[in-house]
Length: 203
Image 1 (cartoon, rainbow, N blue to C red):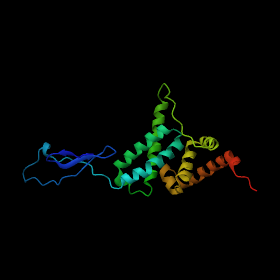
Image 2 (spheres, rainbow, N blue to C red; image 1 turned 45 degrees about the horizontal axis):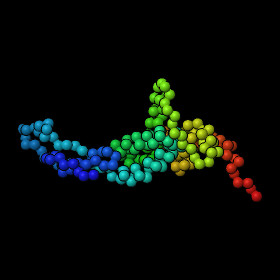
Image 3 (cartoon, one colour; image 1 turned 90 degrees about the vertical axis):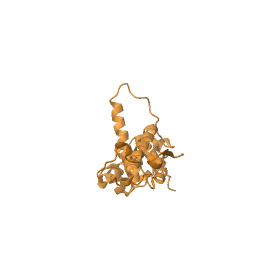
Image 4 (tube, rainbow, N blue to C red; image 1 turned 135 degrees about the horizontal axis):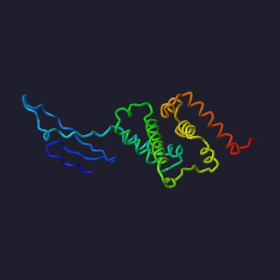
């Protein structure tokens, strides 16, 4: 995108692919003693591009978006939620970028955003239009996952789909590692009971 000239303020200002303004912040010389700059003379403050966020965005949006879709079973809601979470991650990248698992932060924020939105929709009338459900290729597996509670499905997604550790999953879901272990145990028992017929027969 071509830079937008701002005479007398900054050398250039432009917007990146996320719609955020970027540009060079000018050096502000001290005003002579006894004088104060007028409001119109104050420098324009802009946001520098956050280093490494572009790479994080590309590697995270599809992975976490798919994980949210499995958890929520709603593709549209998952897409909106991961996008909202990534915008917030960009705004807080100085903090989020230093976390051990920034993708876990995005997943948690996206999940909380989806829950808040669902609560608002449930309070409205009439009922919202039917959402586009997410399903996996095998109908039996899809039905087994759908039979899990929301909390148990979230743990399965984090541990088995995203491959996060118990600690990373606990941080992402704001629960204790012991809770992760117990929920995963119950969820896998449920899945094994529902999917035992898919096991290959022993010769």
